[in-house]
Length: 492
Image (cartoon, rainbow, N blue to C red; front, side):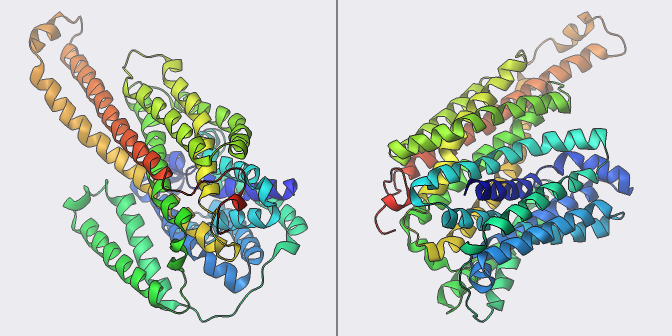
């Protein structure tokens, strides 16, 4: 049972890792393929769009082809296209391989969670979710760190090649342990219209999030057009799926209160987390002058207590109301955001690393709790569909949090800089007193102002994240009460 859990967790880990490991390697990829960095970002966008399209189809794929069979083929495809990504020598080939890799990676996240429910008895489900959830928490943290180390010491194809041994081991474990947990399949007509609407909605939404900052958001006709397509196709998708007799994504699963409430709760908490995960290393490198390795070390502190506290969080959920445990995790995360809110440019490494360390203690309480509590009144026959929707919301909200954080930081920094400049007096006199030649004194003052403005701007982002987490804490108490096991909630 635990060997199966490790295999499923490793599979989930490597897929989530691939969403972030490429980010820091874009300059190396661009140099290796003789393209511009902006072209290199398509390796990120193409993967994210493809993954967002297939995640909510997980329930239909599981019912049509079988959960284990779909998972095995997805893992094999993910490994194959990882290899082909590393072998690509043109940006066109690399983007196509990343799309195919994302199409295979999307179903893996909800499928692994679905298989855990079948393998583990209800009384051990919280511990199983702890193992699985840690992959979702630690992979985005370790991705940039691993990507930087690999790109600096090896070459960019190795960010894809490292997937192969993990995928191979996961395949062997799943093939050896999960065969008897396959579900019966049913042949139903393919909901072509629903799939096309989903593809248009998820693809256009992901492109808005990925390209918005580069194109100045809604000042760009491209972004406006994509946003209109996303809204129209989403509304059409909802109407079609609710009225079709064999929907690709059965939205009727939202009749379960635990799942319906968990989706906005996951969106608020995960977008806040990803916003801070993006902001901290950006601020450390651009304002404090930290090298990528030092910023990565500060970020990696979060993984220490996350791993240590995962079994503690699972044990707490066996004894106490899960809503209390999730709320405690949110309180810890809010405290860390308040610590960052007070950062100044005079801080040392541990000033910046300590909130990351403390935040690791709260993350297992939040995400193990949400993933477990969201399914307490969902029948197992609908679990794959529910897990797919939860994974889809997590994927999209994470992208939204990262995109909005960088955009909000830029806007808040510009506003703060304008305000600071308006309050300065005697700048020319001060510049003359600085013992630098060639106008260096004035340039130094300008850099100081920019640093303070960027610090104030980052505090504004943390403030919005705090508001979102407080909203998530309020949503927790709309969830059904549950202690210990998934079967403890009424209606399961």
